[in-house]
Length: 345
Image (tube, rainbow, N blue to C red; front, side, top):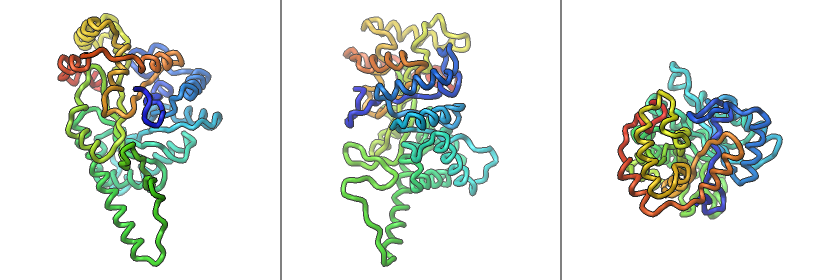
């Protein structure tokens, strides 16, 4: 289903195309201001009111902010932390994170992000708990509701150790409780049924502080059964699936791939042959497949124009042929990372 339990669309508008010449199949380049305005307005009209962006997506944040300021549209924004200078000391990471999220909020012209993600998971290795503390501080400031990380593989998700973020949050809450008990004045507690400041609450009532963005598609099956993702589900998290169309590769014929992607021709040919038995194409099942995965709360999809958005919304409602998911996992469950990770192309 492309609608969640609140009635909101599970499709998230990816905005890399708004600020960059992005995607293997993108022949049009970055849209003009008028084209950008029409696309964003159409997304709101169609109920796609959760958008994914990043500091590194060119001027995407500024273009989104200009639209939101003009339209007054109620849109939830997920953005990402850019990488700091290589020589940034540990004791300055909090200042860096704060300056970056404030720059995003200023460009986006919003007070609070829905989620703020570490774009490069290697930053967790470099800065460890100092980075986790810095990210948590932004939740306490009211600059974002959730924090988390964007990852390429299971090892990066393990490195991020988002369960540790939840532990840190609990330590912070305990410290604040101790301070409150030691003073004569007690702050009022949250109203019953409301999540604490800086979190969202899922339908089971679990407070969700962390979010993760990860690749998931017809050829990439690394995450759904991983212990790391199961642990995130246990502590409460929001999962954004991306690379649903493998940067547009699923829209292309194997014979039309650029030279540097020749290694994708064989698995893409096998995929098309498999789907032909079910009388469907990769585009017919790419979105329904990811939406069928219980771990994926939202699915990020970038588009070039309004017609592509409409096509994605239509395809999201198409049924999955019986038996297809099991066959996909059986045949493509262990492809080399050189095939499924665009950063290695």
